[in-house]
Length: 283
Ligand code: HSE
Image (cartoon, rainbow, N blue to C red; front, side, top):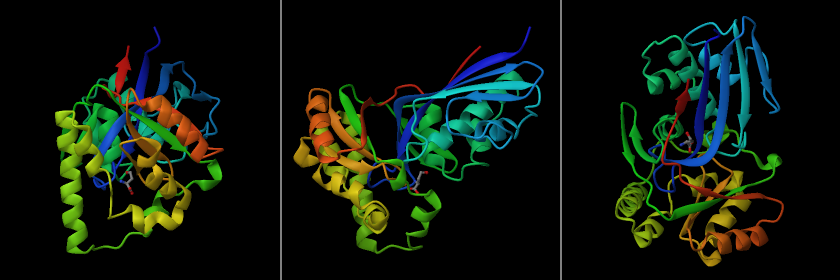
């Protein structure tokens, strides 16, 4: 019988405002990859991604084993550009598929970081929930019941390459900004742990990276700044942008979604919940 696995990986939003490169959360938008040993290489998908060996899922798979005899069937709810962790999810899917099929016992996070330098999206997509991560250590935080979001994705021509976003940041930052970031990150994590919406709301503002990248996503920053006026707890640029994660509680999400639609015409706005679970492999 052909060896076959189905791998499901959630989207993720990194930074969560003040937690640059450290905080991230998994979102309930899913990448699904079916990998089957058919004796022939193929990538089947409707997505605008390569279908040869340069496909990111295939490249990740091939860090562990040749993909020559495998067919990859890919569907995804995760927008490909925008800062929702689509690359991290693709890499994890490829690595996890090869690891399971060949029973390798791979450290999925370490293996995946060989292709994706930043651990934040990878850790959230792998473990689900929220994560506090540094290279070598990940602490998971359970998403509070009732916390939701609206993800606002600008049109494709607003996309921001991560390299450009990283180049906008200086090697060092002033002490007062570092201190503010420590405080705000602590509020966010404490708020998540305590189901305390006020603490989360107080923590979401960032002074470290979003203002320095504002010229790359000016309309996204306008939406971030207007979020509380729309009835939300606050908003954060998702990863390196330009998508915006607007934070809400379940009873407000519908109203915030409507208000955000009016504030960002032409954008793709979706209600999201934070995913409890991370990567899943189905035999
Ligand atoms: N934390 C990264 C950044 C993006 O903001 O550049 C996601 O890995």
